[in-house]
Length: 371
Image 1 (cartoon, rainbow, N blue to C red):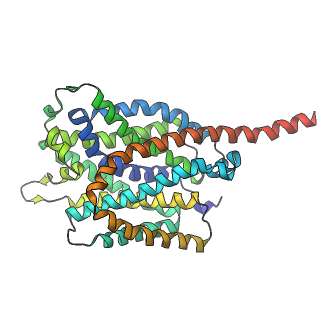
Image 2 (image 1 turned 135 degrees about the vertical axis):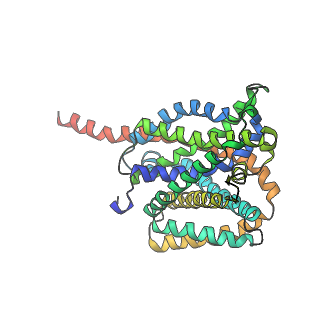
Image 3 (image 1 turned 180 degrees about the vertical axis):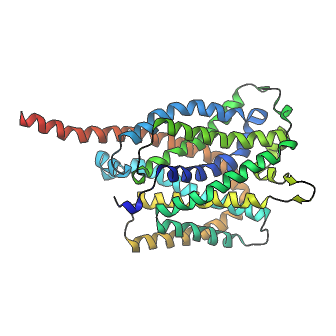
């Protein structure tokens, strides 16, 4: 393993927070609001309770046992053909993640601040920057995350504080009027974004130090708060009925921000937040696809980048011209991708256990032979 590809735990977390944060802070909010309504803010809390067990067993259990890249362990224990039982669903999820982020970014940009710009130009610019980061490696993606995330957090705290006069927490009452079932459905949706913590397993061999269990649990709590915050903000500022109708409730909160009497229209800060998350999310997804496929030679990496660029740009133009069926598909996409990652994480846990036992057997056998 080359030292040039190594990153610390903090940059690794920054990558994940920017990537997953785009989903649980923006993309999945309208679906949770439509499903759980007034009580949607409770759903992330329930997902957090369920997530503790998942973090403690499959995620931490896998990362603790691995002493090599995960795909190397999978090929050694399952064989090259058998490892595709895990590779294929991960490949599908990673490509869908990158494409979904691209489409939603284009759609949002088109409907907010660049309405006259052709869709394919958005795709060319965003894919070009993301694929350039992929070509430079994981450290470039990590360092970019370290530069981008502090300002994303700063702007998020700013909009939360600036909108305090507009919040009416009476909108949160009464609790559980429609029963617990909508909250449970919302929790499953919130959990679909939390399971993306699993991607840490896919690049854990590039991280210098192992994660402690409490660090993974703290990361999960931070991601839960990223979901809960804008849900509370949308409900208390717009009311549950109006918030459920919004396509981008987190962005709509920026339009309420005003400093004094003369300073307003600060929603351009949201452009920075969204593009930062989208860039890192697309880049890390396509980088992990590159690693999954075992693409290492410079010429092969260049061919991979150009192939993705040539395929995704016209496909993005096609999909953004038909956004209504795409929105309907997204209702099923998040549960499907969450379920796939959950099943893969359980399979990875088994692979890590088998890989560890296979490493210990030769040592035990050699001792027995000597006696």
